[in-house]
Amino acid sequence: KNQVEQSPQSLIILEGKNCTLQCNYTVSPFSNLRWYKQDTGRGPVSLTIMTFSENTKSNGRYTATLDADTKQSSLHITASQLSDSASYICVVTSSGGSYIPTFGRGTSLIVHP
Amino acid sequence: NAGVTQTPKFRILKIGQSMTLQCTQDMNHNYMYWYRQDPGMGLKLIYYSVGAGITDKGEVPNGYNVSRSTTEDFPLRLELAAPSQTSVYFCASRTAELWQRGGKDTQYFGPGTRLTVL
Image (cartoon, rainbow over all chains, first blue to last red; front, side, top):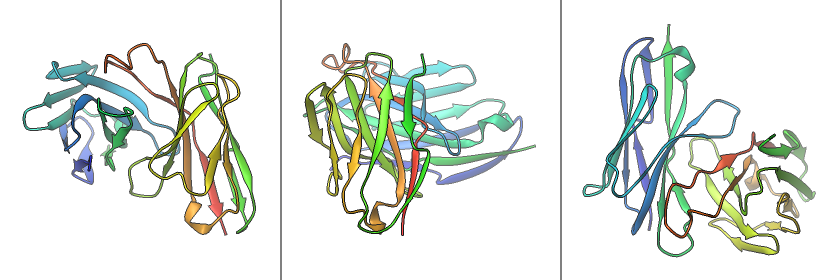
């Protein structure tokens, strides 16, 4: 069964600090991995997307890494801001069958001033 | 472009009532999806559509129905609402061009509909 596990479940950091969120998956065969940011009460918004051949992708202060061999990804946030407070969701899509994406439960990040 | 719009934003239903959640996108996307998000859980796919007239079941289709008569609209129908259907429902859409290449598809999500069944 395809699964996506994220850790930690929640994280509290001070404004200006860096943090790293983890994603482990068992989706096979692999097509792509995406990180989404979901603000409270809003729909998810795409941050990065990586295919098998990519091992790092940046979007401003967000940097995602992918290790397809160990089936792990991380999202690093640099110099956090209050607006980074949100849920970060890892989504992995399989290239087998109907390309239905598998969503992780998300990591809830709170940035304090 | 308005992107993906959903109505209503909030709704309270009594057990056994029916309703339709509306979803419209103006990006001419072929693929559309309905998800539900329960507290502390990942999004679960209810139904999806790869184009007008074509729909298919996702992971949790029981208790729901969909139709896709146009490219823009993808309504979700709840028949005989149950408390287990209390959730936040998200509609999403994406283009089809990179699908077969397993490439860099991005889903665009609507703002969600918060449904409570009492």
